[in-house]
Structures are given as C-alpha cells and as structure tokens.
Length: 216
Ligand code: ATP
Image (tube, rainbow, N blue to C red):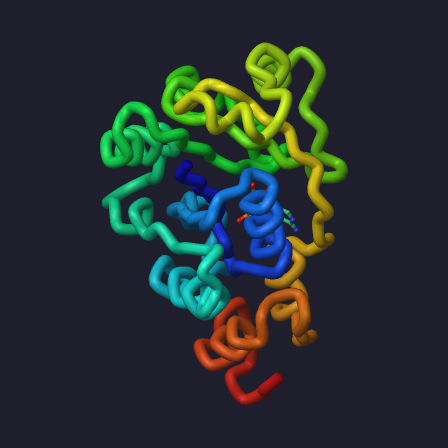
C-alpha cells in the first residue's frame, strides 16, 4: 500500500507530522509520503519558496523512516493537480497496489472543485481526517462520496486498489501553518509548534518575516 499526504506545508509543523504518523499506524503501513504542492499565486508573497518548503520538510522528517518526501508536484512545471499526481503514481505502482491519499475535512470539503475530481476515487482510496470546525456540508459532493464509498475499517483498503473512503478521527494537534506564520510575523517564537531544526532554518533564511539574528 502506498500512502500520500498532500498540503502546502508552509511551513511543515507538528500537526502535520503527528497526523502522518497516526494515519500510517492506523493503516498499518511502513511509510507515509508528504507531497508538498505548488502554492497558488493568490496566497500572496508571505510564504516560503518551493525549495525552502522542501528543505524544511527534509529537516522535519530527518531520521524518521515512517515519513517520506515526494517532490513530484514541485518538480512539475505549473500547477499541481491531485488527479495528475495520482495518475502518475498509479502507473508506477501498477493496477493492483492500494494507493491512498490522506486529506483533512477542511481541504476535502471543496473536493468537487478539484480538477477531474470524479476520476480521483477510481485512482485511489481517500482517507478523510476529521478536523474540528471543518465538518463536511450536508448534501455536499464530499459528504455523498463518504457515504457511498465508506470503508468499514482500515483493513478494507488493503483488499482493493482504490475506490473507498475511510473516515479517521485521530488525535490532532491544534496547530496551523497560518498561526505559525502569524506568530513569526508578530515577532513571537513558534517553538514547540514545529521541530527546532525547522524553526532554526526559518530564522536563518529570514522566512515569514523572521529576524535572522534571533535564535531559539
Ligand atoms: P494553512 O494554515 O496555511 O492553511 P495548514 O497548517 O492547514 O496550513 P496545509 O498544508 O494547508 O496546512 O494542510 C495540509 C493538510 O494537513 C490538510 O489536509 C489539512 O487538513 C491537514 N492539517 C493541517 N494542519 C493540521 C493539524 N494541526 N492536524 C492535522 N491535520 C492538519
């Protein structure tokens, strides 16, 4: 089974890292791959560049064999579309290996606005992680998909290559990248929200308005 977990990771933090480990444990896989995506231009210029986000992720997962980094979306020219990534992975893995994408309810709520979203359940299973304050709207496509394709257990995902939706409710850390960026921009320390190595590198690079002179 191949498991990917996409996001902007701007920057990566302990909420992402714990979630990836929790989901990996629940599914019984050896590794979950983080897949950072392009940041749409409308997000503004407060964030880090693609290479910088990659570097921060590498620092965050260094020495942790249960977490991997898949750089394909940032290596691809132009926007990243989940359907393209899944299609590429499917052709690499072959027809039969289960492929799983992990997504929070906040991102999944707008699933029917993703490009070629109808193809996605045919390419992969979807693990939807419930995030507080981000319930799926009643009657939405996202909720319909969960209901129609619901997997009863993580084991069911091992039985077929794609097509099921599994809802998970693991313990989550109340951390957001937006909160971290805000904290740094305000001149406060985000220590313990993200690994020390990440915070040190953010400071060294002066990212998110960090002052390069201040150290942890
Ligand atoms: P931002 O605040 O910039 O929107 P974020 O912290 O929510 O960022 P993203 O990179 O947008 O992080 O999220 C990637 C994925 O991680 C999404 O599926 C999101 O639901 C999930 N996620 C983000 N923060 C957490 C957290 N603290 N715990 C569990 N999942 C999270």
